[in-house]
Length: 325
Image (cartoon, rainbow, N blue to C red; front, side, top):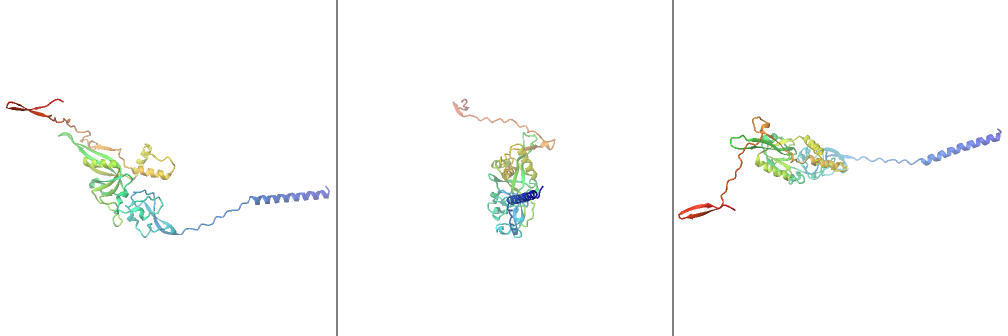
């Protein structure tokens, strides 16, 4: 190979390498996109701790110690209507009733609660369509004073069914209604005293939240027999709710809104039970007591005489009944 051809070959190689480097540089610069840089968000300055709801509190909920807690709140968002730590006593709020619905995590405002003793307290505690009835109870039939406002109870009725003279009466205890919410004991709507301490004491009257139909049944039950209360466990509501869902008697929403589903489940768990009753007789306790109804003589209506006329025959006067249609 002569010198001229070698020089041309080296020049062509140099040109090819230069073109490749230039093309690479062009493609890399064309694909590079400007990188967006996020500006730092200034942190909000936290102010005082305010009282917030730990769970959803529908209208009519009776506040307890598990319903709220103090939480730091942004300084710019703290309002005078909030309950501020160090300036308000949360123990004095126990027993209050929610007037306006409060969602979980939302600050509790002073206007959203009604304190015991304020006007309209009992009406605010009632759910939509519900009524308040007062039931007389004795100390031994009211769980020795350990039933407080906000608890749930079953209502029992005991009675003696008598038969003919000389027969043993049938002693019966029957659960009339279940899952009733206690609104007040006597005229006390709060479980705490003036110092914020729980008080256990006897009472003679208990105010319950019922439906209009159950109110009628309780009014009749007071005239039939003696009423007593049975305190329900908190876990019973969940068990009854699961049973209602399994039996398809509880209608759940078709959508996928969790808030709507939680609301429906809460309403079902808080609904009084009127249709499911149970009873026990004296024979369930003692073999010497009756299990069946005592015998009674058949009722024979007293014969009512019909219209009569007086018939005089000479000096004799007789009273004759008019028969026939």
